[in-house]
View 1 (spheres, rainbow, N blue to C red):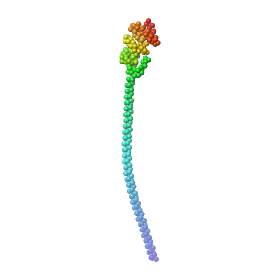
View 2 (view 1 turned 90 degrees about the vertical axis):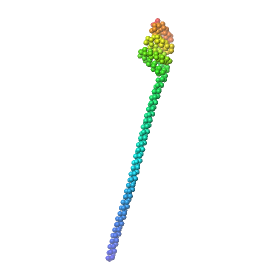
View 3 (view 1 turned 30 degrees about the vertical axis):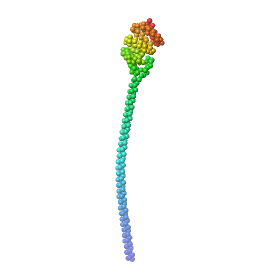
View 4 (view 1 turned 90 degrees about the horizontal axis):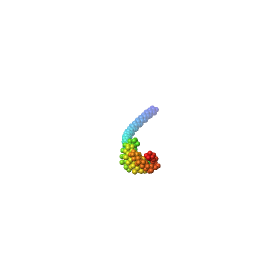
Length: 254
């Protein structure tokens, strides 16, 4: 029985020893598992650091790329702006050239118009006259209408000398004769009216010119010649209003 007791105690000690060994084994296994976990964590941290470093480098590279792209974009914008500015300047230059060309063309046209003959109508007659010719005749007649007969005589006399082949000539001679009559230059007036009738016997103012000649002849005390002139007027232009006036004057002269 004592042997069995010892054996029981031994078995108890062996069981305790085996339990201790199991516990120690479990603890050792747990210790080994903690080391693996630490190594895994350290490895994971190392990998994470590498990833973060790689991401940081990639981020820096991306920033540099973005800065380069922004610089290129700014340069492109500057080029576009300069190109737009150059285009706008070119457009303004073209516009300025076109305006100057238009002004030059207008000036040329205006100068050409100053020399181009134009159609005029004087005393019921139409003809072509140079612009300068028209201006001088109109200016002379404006002087006559103002009653400055001496100045009108001078202006119309110069016109007749300058434009001897003008369509204005018969009218200019008629009014020149009247200006000379008004200044009592009777002989000059008589010659001017006679020249008008010789140059343009069919002129609308021819009857008035004959009547004016009779007035000049009366002023020169040549009544006989005046009567003859009035008779010629009535005979040549019987249906005119001037012929009726001539009949009245002829009756008074008799």
